[in-house]
Structures are given as structure tokens and as C-alpha cells.
Length: 338
Image 1: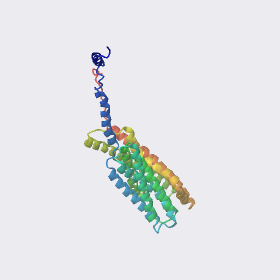
Image 2 (image 1 turned 90 degrees about the vertical axis):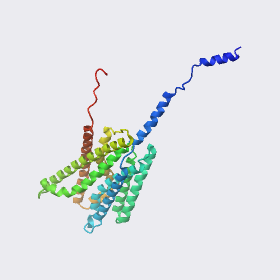
Image 3 (image 1 turned 180 degrees about the horizontal axis):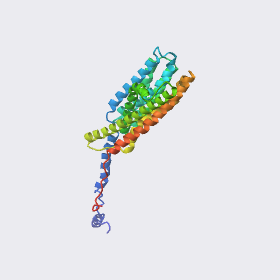
Image 4 (image 1 turned 120 degrees about the horizontal axis):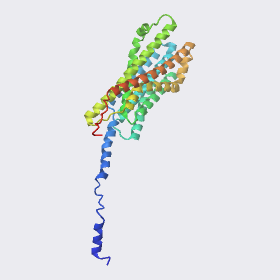
């Protein structure tokens, strides 16, 4: 009797609409993930990366050319090693920026983190190989040339690896700020002598050292201000551009502004690390020329570290203060609504 057709049909209605066919709540998370993916890809996009890459490559080529012109000039003579050691920091910083900017341009549309990082390292490797080949083909064939070529290639690869970071806009701001600060430093070199006179450089060695110290501090302060300003302007422009194109506000939080502003100083300190590891032989050769050269190389190394620290803190504070000025007062909720 239990096999009667009536009994089986009566039992089915008892299973009340196991119809989680109301799967609308289950579908909403997938909708959210679909919407979140474009937001993440927009966050990873660095505007103006191609222009930044072209400018940074041009700057690297200019630094390599000026270094070659200095060390191969007839007036250089036996001081070619000293001039190479003096010019190496500028070349290394330019290679870091060029590697990062070219890697940004190459990976700007990639979304997956692993693929993005590998492509960024590959782009930096290509920039480093191109720079090393150019150095070996155009410079004199000696140990100094090999040191410049090797450290330049290593710096470009490290810069490319930095561009594989999750938030490419911060890396773009960092690269733009460093490039602007380096251009300023080269232009500022023409004002060093007038400023030395202004700061009281006289005939005594003590007065000249004091004036040189104040000139260096002034240069570091202004370079940090420029780096922080450019980093903030780049990130603010990237935000406005994303709003116009995508209609979505993808704001970088304050640590991003802090890091981008401090980036120029961080790259200067990283340059010093690369020089003291990869370019140690060249520094030792320059210091071994004479006792005066040894003192000069020690003083230059200390000055570069101090300059990097000043640019780091001034740039970070400048970018953070500018970002803070854009924040409005927090909305105060009404007592009734609370």
C-alpha cells in the first residue's frame, strides 16, 4: 500500500520548495567580484607611463653620454677614474628610473600580479642590457667601463622589479619625482658658485667647506620639495583622470603619497648601496690615486648619503602635507540620525 501512486505524490509537496532557486543572494557576491575586478585593474594603471618611459630613457642616454664625454676628454688625462667615480651615482639613479618607467609602460595593462612582476623584471633587463651594450661599444675598453656597464644593468633590473608592485600609480609618482629631482640637481650645478659666494666662501679652507655644506643642504632641500610636489601632482592627476575616464574614484591612500614623495630619496640611498656593492672596485681605484682623492671619495660618499636622507624626509613631508590639505572636514552626524 505504500507503493500506491497517491502516497508518493503526496510526499513530494512536503518538501517545501527546496527551491533555493531564490539564488539571488548567492549571485550577488559574484556580481560584486565582477565589479571589483575592474576597480583593481584601474588601481593598477599608471597614466602617462609611455611619456615617462621616453623621458627617462632620454635622461639615461644623456647621463651616459655626458659621462663618456667627461672621461674621454683630453683634459681628463689620469683623472678619468676619478671622474668616472664622480659620475657613476647619476648614471645609476637614471638607470633605476629608466628601468622602472619602461617596465611600467610595458606592464600597464596587465592585471595578474605574477605575470606583471615577471614582465616588469624582463623590461628592466632589456633596458639594462641595452645600456650595458651602449657603454661597452662607446666607452674605452677597460675595467672602469665594465664597472659602469655592470652597475647600470643591475640598477635597471632593480628598477624594473620595483615597477611590478601592486599599485603602479605610486611607482609612477616615485619615478616622475625622482626624474624631476635629478634634472633639478643638474640645473642647480650652475648656481653652486654664486651660492658659495653668498654663503661666505673665502680664501680659507674652513670657509669654503662651510659654504659647500650650506650649498649642499640648499640643493637637498629644494630637490626634496620638488620631488614631493611632483609626486603629489602626479597622483592627483592620475585620480582625476580615472574619474573622467571610468567614473569611479580610485584614490590612493596617504601611505601611497608618503612613499611616492619619499621615493626620490629612497632611490638615492639605493643608488649608494648599488655603488658600494657593484662599483666598489671603481671607488677603491679612485681613492688609491692619492691621499687627497681618498679624502674626496670619503667626503663624497658621506655627502651622497646625507643628500638622500634630506630628499627622502623633505619629499615625504611635502607630499603628505599637500595631500592633507585636500582632505575636507569629516561629516558630523546629526544627533537625531544617530
